[in-house]
Length: 351
Image (cartoon, rainbow, N blue to C red; front, side, top):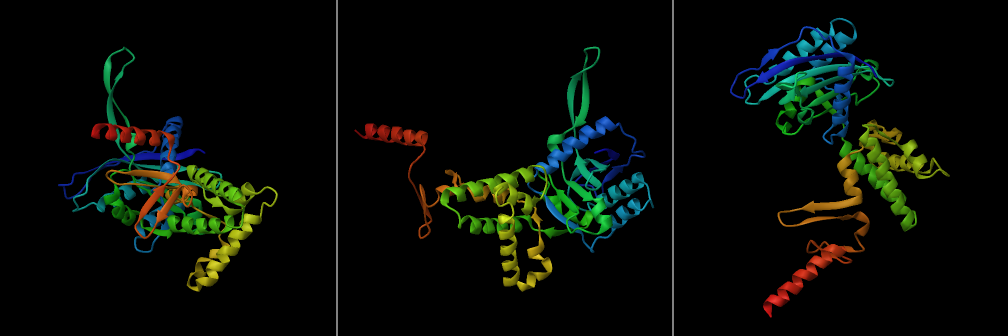
């Protein structure tokens, strides 16, 4: 997985200033081992985020796409491409009160399943280190924990025009306010609603498990979520065929066929979605939050924090919809002990 290009350009936009200051690098010379280490760190950060969105270039902002295609077709250099993209990005902040500083890091990588192009917003951090002579000296380094927005473009898929989700991006902590500006900059258009697709998939899982004995049903739900979470961990889609084989080695196509049957029913019930080719999808991108909520209910307010397995609902946990209350039996031993101690203390105080 060699890094073929790596370059950074410095940006500084004060909220009181009309425009951003830009300091562009002139070369993309880099040490391969250093670039590989940085790429590995950033890839893990990007994959681990739950804020990812998937899509393609929309028609409203063709500049980013046009510049990318020029580079891919050898009409401009990587340095020229990234300099122009940096200036295009900074223009979005003109006459706004948004603040942005640090570096835009541009990277290209060759992978077995297609080439990738990345844009990361990096920030620096200062600290004190020991020199070779044992003297204290100030040093600066990349603050990976404070990585900002990130964009990943599957350039192979873009050139072949065979996908509707070749572009993905995520944003860092405190960057929600600049999301729209970033979307305008890259011309991002959503084509995948991962939350909706995951919830639709989990409804199919629920329908499938209803036909199984209770113990087998619970085991199947757990296996489904674990498989999907593992795929999400590596930033990979969930393939129905692979999941089906994981669930039942004796009948490896059983679950896959059930999914396709249910998707066909969804398509027939919603003919306006026919163009989406619901029944022909062979995979989906999992939404981490929906998966967690499927096997565990949780929530909190100022005074109460609750979390319990979804399997407990209807058993040890009963929900009364008429008055929005829960009745919990079989309390955890530690909690029960604390409650009894408090009750004994209150009765002793009153006597």
